[in-house]
Structure formats: C-alpha cells, structure tokens
Amino acid sequence: MLPRAAGSPVARARLPSPRRARVAHRAVEGIMTVIMRLLVTNDDGVHSPGILALKKALDPLGEVIVVAPERPRSAVGHAITLHKPLRLHRGKMADGLPAWSSNGTPADCVTLGILELMDGKADLVVSGINHGPNLGWDVHYSGTVSAAFESVMIGVPAIAVSVASWDDDIRWDGLARFAAKLASWLSEHPLGPHTLLNVNAPNLPAGELKGIEITRLGSRQYVDRLIKRVDPTGRPYFWLGGTLLDGQSEAGSDVHAVANGKISVTPLQLDLTSNAARADLRAIEGL
Ligand code: MN
Image (cartoon, rainbow, N blue to C red; front, side, top):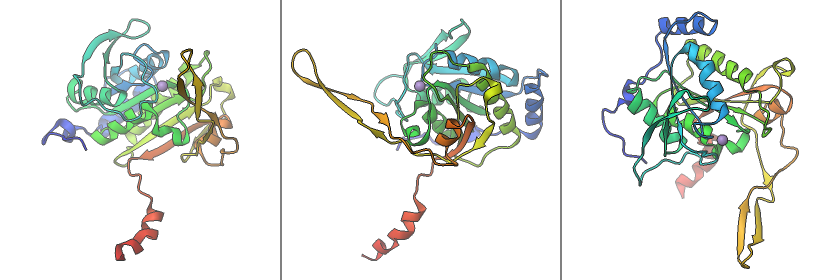
C-alpha cells in the first residue's frame, strides 16, 4: 500500500460538468472548442507511432498532455517506482511534437501527469495505442491497461486502447478516431467509479471491421511458457514466452470479438474479489 498524502490533489480530480461535456461532443464532430483536459500515456514509449496517432486524434477534444515512458516498458504491469528518483523530461514524439517523457513506468507517468502537470484536473486518461493485444488474462501484465488502472485509482476516468496485432503495418488512424469518439461519449456518459474501458481492435481497414462489441475479459493461457537453453559458456538461461492455447475464444469475450473482426470494449474494475468464492468460504469463519 502506498502512503498517499492527506489532502492530495486526488480529491480535486473530477468529471467534466454537463456543459463542458456537451462542448466536448461537438468538438469531436469538427467544431473546435477547447474543453476537456486529457492525459495520454502508453507503455511502448514516447516515440511510438501509436501514441502519436492517439494524441493527434484527441487534440480536437481539448488540451492534450502527453507523458510517456522514455523507452518501451511493455509488460511491466502495474509496477511503480519507489526506490529511485522519478524524472520528467521535455521531449518529442515521433514527428517532433512536444511531449513529456519519464524514466518511470506507465503507472508512474499517469501519477506524474495528473498530479504534477495537470494539478489533479484531468478529465480523462487515454493509454495507448498499444502495439499488440491486451486481451483476456494478459491485462494483468499490461503496462497499457495498468496505466488506466492507476488513473481510476487516482479518481480520473480512463481508457486503454490496443491494436491486437504484431504486424509492422498498423492502421493506427481509424482506431485513434474511435478512441476520440469514445472519449467524447464518456464525457457525457461517465462510468461508475474505479472502472475503465479496455479497447482492443483488429488491424483491419475501417470498411472490413464488423462493428463494436461490449465484452467480458476472456482467458489467455499459454503452453511452453518457459524455454530453457544453454548459453555459449555452458550455463542455462531461460526465456519467457509460449504459445497461445487454442480454443479459448468463448462468445462474449474480448478474445472472441477481436477474432471475429470487431472492436472489443471491455469494462474493467479494480475490485478483483471473487464473490462466488466469498459465499463458498463463509464456512471458514466458523472454524
Ligand atoms: Mn506495449
């Protein structure tokens, strides 16, 4: 548990007022009015093409501040930096646009962005666009999704966005536009507390997408997770990875939606409690 200072700017984080939300909705249709305060981050690093596409698509909604790791930090999960100084640098994105970068993790970037650069007054955090899927159980490893979780912990709504493909040739712009539409929609229809949206999309041209599906988290199990080899000096080394187990694509899940050409939108919450097990375990209280 992190010690958090009493009276921190957390309490000041809030949703946009209804009036601000209406203006935000018009802004995405093309009428330029500065309203929402958005923080953009990722785990692929500040120089990645995905975060640039996202920033450009969100710009019409208002003020967009980018704070991202100075180098790729995929699969760091919800790690935070406690034992060394955290730094913020003025840097540039892939096309030279100004952005903040940090030596910290994606979750650190969210904290720095909201509390240091935005004085707690962020309306929404958008994390991505990640190059690669963040589906099913893999969200627990994801720096992209964890940045969004850090945001909802602080009290700011959040979206995580990933393109579910490792291809080199990614169609960033269509997904970035969808993220902007979703951000605008959320400004008028806020989610409950401590809930975020995890978006995954296939790497398809807009005309080939089969629509949008609200999903639940699927399962992602791997085989051959640990590979053992021997280095040239004769010592063993290990490589984590593995191959996805087939047959995990249950209807209604994020995995299934993306496999069927749809954009998957999964609401995720911080509360990991198993209520089924809680009921079953009541007997323990009498031991
Ligand atoms: Mn990544």
